Image 1 (cartoon, one colour):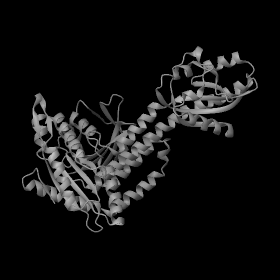
Image 2: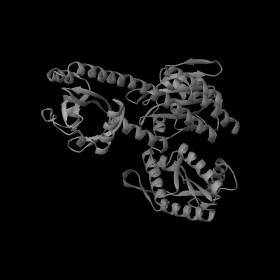
Image 3: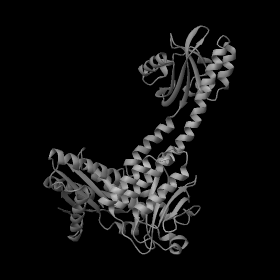
Image 4: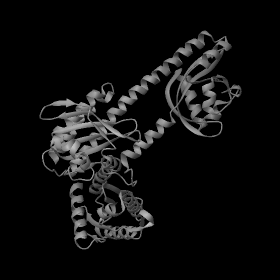
Length: 483
């Protein structure tokens, strides 16, 4: 494992400095990732797939076959032909399929895809960008079944994250080109304004024709001298009422306006200032602003271009949330949980504080899915997570490792205390009813394994010991806690 993770760090370090991250050559980025997949995970086939606009079709944008050293693209998988696979992508951080022909997530792909290519196992990770699943990275093992290791699933998730970075870079480059045109327009308008500064009527014509919101404000009293229709609409002010408005009143935090103007006076111009503004009705929004100091009729003014970036900011926030949270249950996702676990382990070693971990999963979860359907199964998972979270302290961390398996980090907690917490969680889940189809209540119980960090053991070792305790709980009748 240490050898593979060392190679992982080395190759990702190379990719981190790759030209692909500039966004200028996204195809090269895809190719680098697929080649890395096959080398690192020792699979015959590595591929990147992208969703179409409707989200109902996946197209392969790059497939690398290790033996032939060959790249290709163009294969298509549809949601209609493989609904279970598409559903699994939406519900899991990583799909680790040991036997692709029999696993419910991939069995629909057997005849049209897997059998003819000899694919026996698959390890797939969805790609999330801007709060939206845009594709998937796919590792395909040719031959018989293959059991994927814990660290291999982490690597698959990292590969998906790298592809997301390449896609984001490409999208950002397009946005920067658009913004560059906007900035160029502001610069050009400044030149025009300087040439026409004694002809207010002509300046109104130029402002009115501008494709972005623009406002001209006197510096000495903060009052609007001129603005275009786009600016008036952005702030919810009738155009004939714009002149004379005090711009400071339209900042969510008025002192931020004072700080920005201070910088503008000092530097003469500002580019891409991100700031929170508000409309006349009080609704706040994020804006990116560029400004110039200009003169009109002998008075110093600020000429400001305003671009509403609220949607982009919201998507960035969603992306940050999705990068760390399981989309179904709200618990920390596997990668984030492991990161937090490593951090807590290091803190525990430094401070000599106790650290414990609980691992639990639903008893007979397959029966819930089979008897009541996947919607009921999802309800069971969210109920488990909500009940468990309600039984924890603020410092404890609940994570979903995959499927119906969850883990809990318990900082500053020894084994005795962890057993108390685990029993509280078990009881909370058992007391929670899950609504199945036709109004039927489903009883869900969990088995819990508990372990305390010993010496300087690794987080992986701690997880394995908790996993052994979990299976011991199942062997002794389920719905119980075992150390």
